[in-house]
Image (cartoon, rainbow, N blue to C red; front, side, top):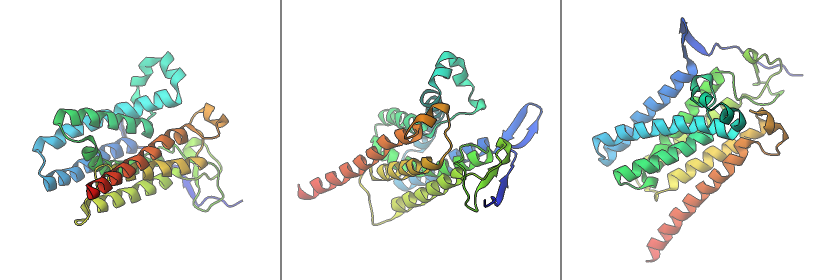
Length: 267
C-alpha cells in the first residue's frame, strides 16, 4: 500500500473568542462575494451600467445563493429530517449547503432582478457566472479546510488522510479537483468576455458555465464518498442526477444562441 504524502489536520477555525469563532469557510465565502463584486464592477464600468445596478444585483445574488444553497441541501439530501424539524433549516451555522440549490437560487433571484431592472435575464447571467465560477473555486477550498466532501480511498501519492474525520487511509482530495476545474472555467469565461474581437451571443457564457461546472461535478462525483446514506444504493448519486439537466440546459443555451446567430445571418 502506498501511504499518502499529506496528512490533513488543519483546524477549520482561524481563531476563537469565547463562543464566537472565525472559520476559513466563512471567510472564503465572504471573499468570494467581495472578489465577485470587484470583477462585476469592471463589467459595469466597461458597459456604462447605472451605479446602483451592481449594489442591487449583489443583494439579490447573496440572498438567492444562501437561501438556495441551504434549501437545496435540506430538500435534496435530507428532506425527511428537515421537513419533520423545519426550524433546523434556519440553523445554517451547523453546515449543509448544496451547489445545485445555489444554482437554482441564483437563477430565480436573477429572474426577479431582471424584471425589476428591465434587462435580459441571459445578459445578467452571462456576466454573473464569471464571478460565480471564481466563488466555486474559493468555496471548495473552504470545504478542504473543513475536511469535508472528500473522495473515496486512493493509492495515489497525493491522497489526503483527513485526520479530523478520523480517517486512516488516504482519500481523493476531490475538493481540490473541483476547485481547480472551477478556476480553469473562471479563466476561460473571463478571457472570452474580455476578448475584444469576440462578442458572444447572449446565453453562450452561461451555457459554457453550466456545461463546464456540472459536467466536471458529474465526473468527480464517481470518486466521492456518499454524502447521505441513501446515496449508497444509487447507481448515480444525487449530485450527478442534479447535474444532468444543468449540463443539458447549458448545451441548449449555446445551441439556441448560435441558431439565433445563423437566423440573423440569413435574414
